[in-house]
Image (cartoon, one colour):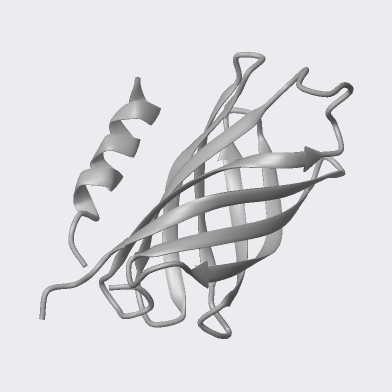
Length: 142
């Protein structure tokens, strides 16, 4: 219950704002196309959703959830660093499955507010995943 309350607090705290400008918010979701710990095709799926708050043009704070079809649930806390508008590096702690991931991604704008993302993550449990998803930017009011 405490994890859910924290997630709701972070979600409501960050509703305001434009991508890669301080105080903007980006809400996204994705799923793993490939993960090294999957034994069979469609035997297990991993889905995730995140809220990224832009602290500056290049740094975000991240909060979210990861869900597995085998009934695991994990709260995610981390951040992203954008060395350019299209590339980012991220680090995330997964509270609930007690793991940590470091990865890199590519973000392709579809419209002014909508982006396609492709991400590769390495997990400390010696797994690798390739993820795709969509992200929507809530632009800051000027």
